[in-house]
Every structure is written in C-alpha cells, then in structure tokens.
Length: 255
Image 1 (cartoon, helix red, strand yellow):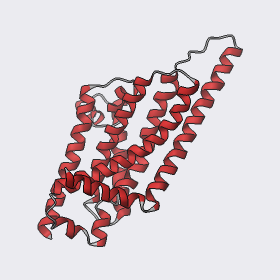
Image 2 (cartoon, rainbow, N blue to C red):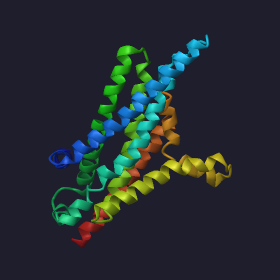
Image 3 (cartoon, rainbow, N blue to C red):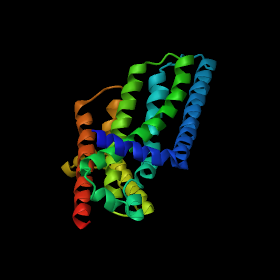
C-alpha cells in the first residue's frame, strides 16, 4: 500500500506542478457553472410564468435541477477523462521512463493502482468545484441532500470505470494525442450504446444497451443505490485495471 501511495503522490505532483490540473479544474468549473446558472434561470422563469397564469409551480429542486445537472456532469466527464488519462503511461513511454518502472522492484499492480488512484483523485477535485454551486442551491433552497450524495457516488464509480479504461489505452501508445482520442472514442461508444435499445428489442440490442455506462447511472441520478449498477461499474474498473496489468506485463518482458 505504501508503494501505491508513493506512485499516486508522484502522479498528482506531475499534474499540479504543471498547468494541466489547473486548466482542467478551471474549464470544468466554468462549463458546469454555465450549466448550473442556466438551469437556475430556466427554473425561475418557468416558475414566474406559471404564477402569472395562476398555476401552482412544483418546487422539486432535486428533480428539476439537481438530477439533470448530475447528468450534465456525466457528459462533461466524457471530454475531460481522456485528458486526465492520456499521459499516465504514454508520457512514461515517450520519455523512456517506462523501462525504469518496468524493471523496478515495485509490482505492476502497485504502479497501475497508484496512477489510476491519482487520476480519480484529480477528477474528485473537479467534482468538488461543482459542489460549490450546489452549496448555493442549499443556501437559498431546500433540496434533499441524500439523492445528491448518491448521485456523486454514481459519478465517481462511472468516472473510475472510464478512467480505468483510459489507463489501459494509455499503455498501448507513447503518443498522448492518440491515447486521448482513443479513450474519448471508447468512452463515447460506451455512452451511446444505450441508443440501440430505443429501436431494437432483440437480445443483442439489450446486451449492448446494458453495457452503456449511462444506463447504470440512472438509478444513482434518482438517488437510489442499485446493487447491479454498482457491480457493473466495479467490474468495469476491475477489467480496465486487469487489461492494464497484462499490458504492463508485456512491457516488463520486453524490457
């Protein structure tokens, strides 16, 4: 566990010693901030219009603001996760330090988990920026905090799964652009697989729809922890890290 933390700290330091982490945090915060204030504006305008027509306005902040915003965070993550993972191993291969890692006494699993954990911590910091907006909502409104916490748990599990996939892809090339583009393509594909279930009911279509990461986030977005959805994300994390370990093993043999 000590070696995992050493690798994690080293990776986090490389993020924050360069402009990468600050740029990602700033852009993520600004983009989500726009979504947040736009959602608030729509909510207020619709409420005023319904009051002017003499109609009652259902003040459900969780359903009308928080749940759609959590879906937006999930979409934003599709673009930022490849930027986080593309350098994890590709940069090591480009600079030649991958040989030092491959021949070091540190086990492959410790290296992989340390790098993946650093990426997950950075993404968690990005989620904290979104929490600042929700703090404003709690100050002036009265939403239920439990669905929000469960929604954040779902976002972390979903991000962990996609980060694990991105970590694996980063071991396949020394070009960060290729690693980032390939990760984005795979993440986007895992997102849109759900669309097949909208027009096809065959068994293969249901399987593809089930493999979509957004399908398993719906229960978290409603504030419900579904066991099968949790297992799906954990399984995807395990598979991503497992394939990364096999890729690292091949690098160790070639070193």
